[in-house]
Amino acid sequence: MISFSTCWNSGRHTEGGEVIDEIVGMGFDTVEVSHGLNVSLIPGIQQAYLDGRVKVSGVHNFCPSPVEVMIDAPDCYEFTSHRPYERKRALDLTFKTLETAASFGASYVVLHMGSVPMRRISPELEGMLDAGEGDGRKYVKAKIKLVKKREKLAPLYHQRAGEALAAIAEVAEEVGVPVAVESRSAFEDVPNEVEMLSLMEEFADNEWVGYWHDFGHVQRKHNLGLLDHEEWLSAMSPHLIGCHLHDVEWPARDHRVPLSGEIDFDRLMPHVGAGKPVVWELSPTRKKSDIKKALPQWIERYGS
Image (cartoon, one colour):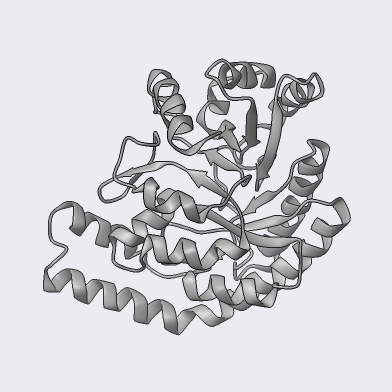
């Protein structure tokens, strides 16, 4: 099922119905109501949903955006934070997102879980790849440093993510909307692949928790040599709730229009399975003409 994220155009409109009209005008009939959405846009989107002008596949945490945060910042509050207030605020906002999702008849909520507090080395590695230095000793040393540093610090933050997910799962069951833990682009984020597998095993018997595959994020880790994209998606397919779809220009320019970059979707899409939501999550800088051109090409190759 193809859906389209409101992250592409919600910042350009002051009325929610206009957000929907622009997306529907490009050929999409389903949206994901995304993070960064001003609360003032919700009534118009809700009306479009009630009028049958659009379907809603899911909602991305936090939605609506917290009133005290003036920019689109889905990681403004983290479940892994060392500040108890921030962890509680993240939970409260997530519970509100679940209520929003239920009001739309949504089938999932996408979650970011947090991060390990350390100097960000992933962008440095991507910069070296971009400069053609991926085979050098400096790159290898920096990657080893990243892995070792994170491994040393990570257990506490993985524990906090698991505790938060347990609390969220209870509310997800109450409102009838599953939550999906998203794969992230930076190795410093929580969970990494080992931790994601651990979380999925921990919640294996809980129908309200699953995995959300972000093609662009995972491709960036693939480009860093931290995983194999196809092997990872294949391993996670039993837990898969849905996907964020966008392409990548080497090595790390993501949220590009599908079929315009380097991702080998022919190898990857068979691991997604029929009927799963595939949400086009594109940068606001992507041109409408390119999106409209890519949509029928995608449907011809992979279906709708």
